[in-house]
Amino acid sequence: MNSARVIGVRSVELGVRDLNQSSTFYKDVWGLEEVATESNALYLRGTGRDHHLLALREQGKASLLAVDFEAADRDAVNQLHAKAKGYGVTIFGDPAPRPAFEGGGYGFKFHTPDGLPIRITCGIGQHQDTTIDRSRPTKIAHVVLNSGTTEAQIRFFVDVLGFKLTDSTHLMEFLRCSSDHHSMALFRNNGPSLNHIAYEVPDIDGLMRGSGRLKRNGFNVEWGIGRHGPGNNVFSYFIEPNGFVTEYTTEVEQIDDASHIYGDAAFWDRLPQKPDRWGMAGLPSNRMQLAMSGALYQSNAEPNSNERCEDIIGRKLG
Ligand SMILES: [Fe+2]
Image (cartoon, helix red, strand yellow):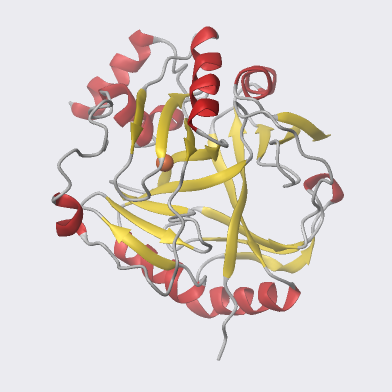
């Protein structure tokens, strides 16, 4: 039996309008550190060992260029490539060595059935050093993708990539590929796009300190600070300069396959405080809901312009 599967989410590659603007935000405000550059691209690491958490590529508009997952070894990469090919999704070439500036390794890129870009790689280089700074991200915690065909996406992520369904709500499906409650989630939406990227920080104090750094630099907490139901993780959401939603999170529930009981939408409906167990955060603002729908970054508008934002909300709701 083919048991190859994805074992973790490692990084995300984003197309950005202005590399200088994005670089300043992610280095000076978000807390990442430059590790490599290549023509119009910049690679940024966190405080953990992963080679990079974020790649930024200037291309005149904001877009999702890849979500990077890890597989255990070349055999697993080759098997996953064959499974994806057999499923009939669009694949961009055979597995091959990856460039050194991306951390090396061996992998391939393809599109989900929805048409969103994914890469699976093994053997990505790791840093020997780590930094202790609770206010800065250690790793990618999860990526949430919007989809108009959630059930078809779940089948692909489970049957082909080896994810397990941890929990479901009326809005979201939470999928795990490690002990983390979810490394990826699918959000019911009109169509495929990036909902948000979550970066893990070591603890709540670090999350508060990081959020304070954002606030001092003019980026208010757009949703939070709260504690989610599924995953039990503490959250603080922001909208970055391209209109992407970016999250600090911590205390993500760790799942033991042997004892975990899947919670369906009816189960989570019984939670008294939704979607924040503390009852502090309330619902996301219209602006945050717009950004999470993908419409803000896809509009290529300057997200910090309230006027433009209102125009986009008007178009979407109108
Ligand atoms: Fe999240």
